[in-house]
Image: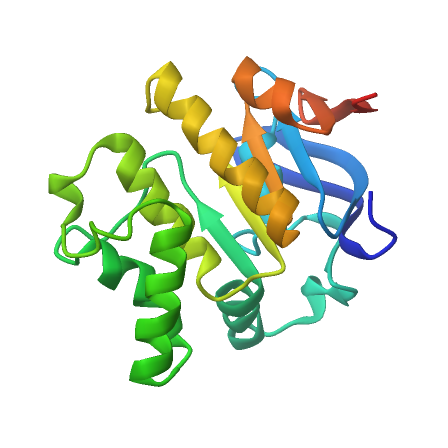
Length: 231
């Protein structure tokens, strides 16, 4: 792990109430991630993986404990500050791709850059760079419906990369693709991590992802069960 702490969870819990019942989806979890890490959160369904990712991605707030992103306590931020943090410093790659169907691959990749208010020429140049980086330089004109599942996920990775975030959160990124496509996506993300220093945090129950990760954070029933680093 890098000495530069990118993310820190300090005794974080997230509690959901269902009538009179209380479900601790995340139960007093603590860990840190360094810049350049390639880490997977794993565990069975219902273990709290996606909830932890949502807390780190500022899509949800903890009921207890604190989450720090690049040293900032996100619980102290306003809704507007959280929105800017998500937009500028956190990239998201979802299991279901979450591409905008009426936009082309290039327009999807440009989406966050345009939200940031970047100039047209800068957006055009940056989109060309990231589409080339994910192997889709010639497919920027296609809409999601004209792309395979693996190509759609590559567009999602390009969109996440475009604003050069501090960290990319990937929630089950290989779940909806075949084995060969999954291996290709993992090759791509490993290369981005190695060559660009991009920090990745996955939630997964895919053995292929777990074998590639340099660190595994295992959850069970919302609690931290193990935290191991590959030798």
